[in-house]
Image (cartoon, rainbow, N blue to C red):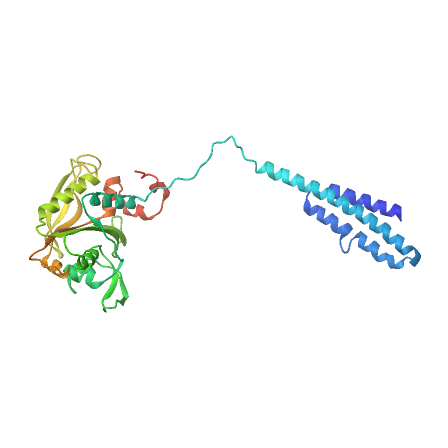
Length: 340
């Protein structure tokens, strides 16, 4: 029996030593110590031994089993240490390499222009106001002198919502930020001097138009605010925004239902890719008396000017961007080009 058990112990030791990984070691363990293994079979044979030798027989087998378990424990520790060393070696970090650091982000070009516009107008006394992107028909069209059936509505095809507000007015995604002029002027007394930047929506999409785009509207209402004030304010703004005192700026007669007289504002660079070209930059004009009346004010006492500019347009001209869609594709190669 002792000779047989010594042989089993030696076989177990050889099997454990030859195991190259934990999986192989578990297989060897199952062969010798598993519920159907060598020692399980030996313990089953106890019942065949005479009663006077049974106790001694069991003690001998149990002693041999403990030796095999000790050998298993030693081999398992050895394999775990070996696997740990291999892992540490493969995952070693060369601390002499320069640090990678964190990726630096940047402000989106449109937001950069948005903040720049706000800073410029705030510096000359304009307040910044904001409001909902889902508007009602009155604020978006009717109060701005574009009643139902007016051609200006078809020029601003938009996204209507199959809901009405508490006053039973049709809801839609605003087509410009001018509704904020109505909202603010209806609850505030002149002087009113505001800009309203934000998102607007129209059914349009190509290289120069997007279904969602950004505008900044400006409004100044007070006594004796003339067209010359509009020219002075907006001319100064453009020269400051583009950092170019040599800009040529012209006001070209046009039509908008909410202003009278109305003008398109064009500008010309003296340098760069657009040198010598007149570029349309904004719509503007004296606020129509009907609109002032819809503000709840008397047009006999109050007058003023308004303008509206596309933030995408301003950004494209400032940074030399030719395709509007670049702003919305989230291509990091494009966004990383514009840092300042």
